[in-house]
Figure 1 (cartoon, rainbow, N blue to C red):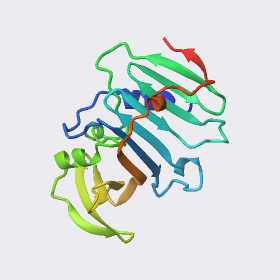
Figure 2 (cartoon, rainbow, N blue to C red):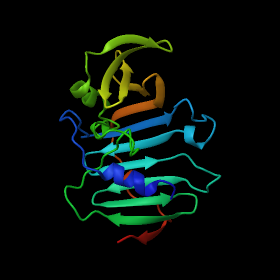
Figure 3 (cartoon, rainbow, N blue to C red):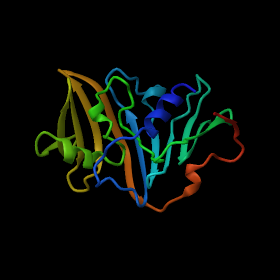
Figure 4 (cartoon, rainbow, N blue to C red):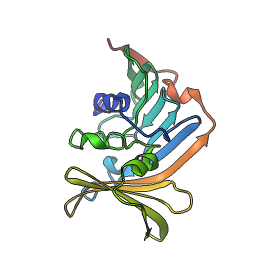
Length: 213
């Protein structure tokens, strides 16, 4: 699959996050890449969805990429994980033989980003910025929405997180290098406290799976 192994390594990587980052109930986040050079009408600009529950359960699903014939789904129920193409109904099953079995969902999985940003995960954004922001958050207005802007410096990058002024839910993440925006992410929705559904963290029925040693 296009970036399956890269993403799977990222979501299973052990990172250090704030103790405030907990998932006693299920979290669902829908987000999209809005970096200036990304075509918002193409596959790269389509929404992705991530679920988290506890430390062992996770799920990430991309939009269908009809040109490549891929509809990617990654499901994790530690120590098991599955990479699945929902269009072909085929996938791979992996077992993590190490410990601890923890699911992580970094906002940045690119190898080019500094190590210090690995703790910025979906669902842990505010806890991470509270621990790492260089200054107290500043209130501002973005597209008519009253938000707080958190900012930190990581190497040559400046990272800004925008959260709702009242609900404290993430609205966007913007990364700049000098004057250039090198990454932009917009949240379509951020829902926590959802009723757990363990079926989400297993492969759907009818998938032909290959065992990966």
